[in-house]
Length: 619
View 1 (cartoon, rainbow, N blue to C red):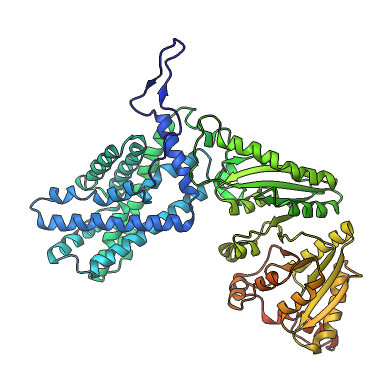
View 2 (view 1 turned 180 degrees about the vertical axis):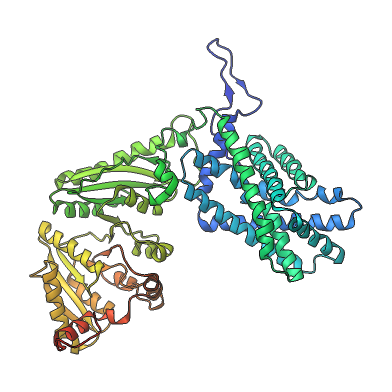
């Protein structure tokens, strides 16, 4: 766990109105300690998976120091007490070094969850990542001790005895002893935030963790390391030990930290416990969000969130436009307004998503989020002016969050738009070309249609729409149709076939596709050979190129080098990438659509030319 942040509130007690000077308190009040706890937890729960996991891995490996010293000294000393004296050293490394230990995380993240500032699924995710990192680190340490020649025979026997003693202990006793250990660890975290100097923290950590071996208590990461060491040295099956020894210790540590410390400390604080800038006047998670997280809307309360709860009018077509810089992203706002103006009840919702620092600093004169909110409102006036020029309803909001990329999808789930229009992230080209991150590609579906714009003027006067069919092309057709209606855009349809023998079938396919999508009168072009080269040739005279973001699964496109990034660089016009929520199976998400779907013109020719009773296999 990272060390406590600087005191977010004044630690002075007012002398009242009698004119006496303020007196500096000798110690922080429970409210002030609680404020430091939740301020640090706010940083932790927004940490990335890699940052969190490797910090936890380092903590797990540091536990090896405790195991090593405890076994070595116990094997050579005449009394157990001498070995016990060195037991806390690994924990001192972890806490003073700011690493992530699972039992420490039964306090700060839980406090944030009790305040309904993060959801229960977010808390569980945080716990699982830290626990996994601790176990991997502890396991690596056990491997080093088992095969590194660190222990002599006597020390190895003592180390094995630690695990054997735990395995022989009844599960109920393990649970109770572990609950007391969890109480001690979470208490250390609380006092660590209350302490004003490093020496005091060091002393508290040392004495508290000294109580674990002296009281014959159990810590889950130490126990896991002992079990892994036992399995490696003796070759025994670790599964019974994990379920009968480590699991009761895990449950006991968790209960001791959460119930006996966090909840007690929470209820001993007053209603002023969150009177710090970061959490003042925030809208907490609803009960559904608190229980279900992002499935119900939000999983985390941003630093600043002015998005109002929206009750959808089924007759309204809503477009969400998340922007990072109102000065440079006017083009996507204008594009969204053009699309909305083609609808009878089109509404554009522009949300300024501001990347917040990982650690939130306070300002004595003014809350930073208030200052950011005012500046954002001023910058969003340009977006409101664009809305008035296009005579559409335009709403603006501001969200300040350390998780700006994820917030875009949270906003989409919360506001239920029909379409999200967002600008190209020039600092992360691949992630911008994808409307989903890799894990989302394999596990989730988009909440709505997405349109990602590479803004080079976003002039819709001459639109090139390459298509091979599919839902993404359907979305592009709807966008092109709206722009043709609003701006009198010229639309050209392009289909690329494998060779010249398929060109006639390609023309028939495009005419049929144009009729199905109300794009009659659009110019039709059929080319053959390399797809990207054909698109680049056709786009030479175009002002806007529309493409599907994901025609195939993620891995297949990476392997085949078919992400279309080269053609996006090769053309001079603006590019729109469209993606619709997909019903693809896990297999299709991993390996893409069947190869026969890549040449719909050939499939179209087969359907037209085959006898009526023939089975072409294309359906």
